[in-house]
Amino acid sequence: MTVATIIIDMQVDFFLPHPRLTQNRPKLTANINALAAIARRNGSPVIWVKQVFASNLHDAPLEVKRGGHRIVIEGTEGANLLPELDFGASDTILVKKRYSAFFGTQLDSILKDLNCKQIVVAGVNTHACVRATVIDAYQRDCDVLLAQDCIDSHDEQHHSVSMRYMDGKLGVAMNNEQIDAELQKSWRRN
Figure (cartoon, rainbow, N blue to C red):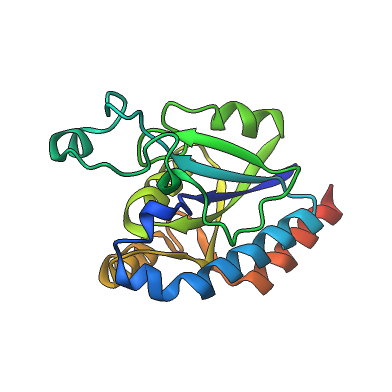
């Protein structure tokens, strides 16, 4: 059984307007790069999930359409992954249109093809896209490891509440060192 590492919305537009994420960006990206290296070393596929909308917002959720929010627009710099992230040649990019990485994407079939029933989740924003993805994984009977060194939100309070809610209920929060040990155990079982 494979363990997939899913990294959510580490895109330019999700960092620029938010002082907290901008301040935490160097540490967060370093931790995510370390997690991706751990995953690759342990044979865990790395899936980078990006939210991307058409320029006319026809495929965006209601909040974005109604507010005319021009974020993560296809073909713009803001839709790109942060340039300091280490995207590997064997990594996959998955585009989503809603909070959950499962909703309207090929993630279910990708995980099925990998014989994957355990995932590691990282990225932003804890209270929105990370949480929605974790809930959907839980609903699919996936074991979820929450990469606590690699998850953050523009809102500290929402981040804390969401992590408390998910940890022990929908998944297990672990630091990178613990995830490395868990992936090594999983590798030996296979």
